[in-house]
Image (cartoon, rainbow, N blue to C red):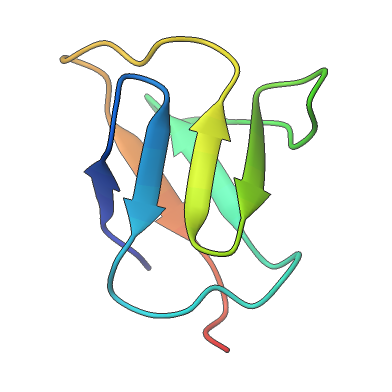
Length: 67
């Protein structure tokens, strides 16, 4: 499990460990998000960039395997 720290309304960085590539599952308000530029988010290293704005009341959960 990782804690996401917001860098903006669309970008978040996991800070508790390094995410092993292609092992993440990202949930917003309990709904699994789809990876890809044409979908819900992209990921580069530990930085997740959503394709839409995250609202203050939204809950983000990220699960992954540590590198």
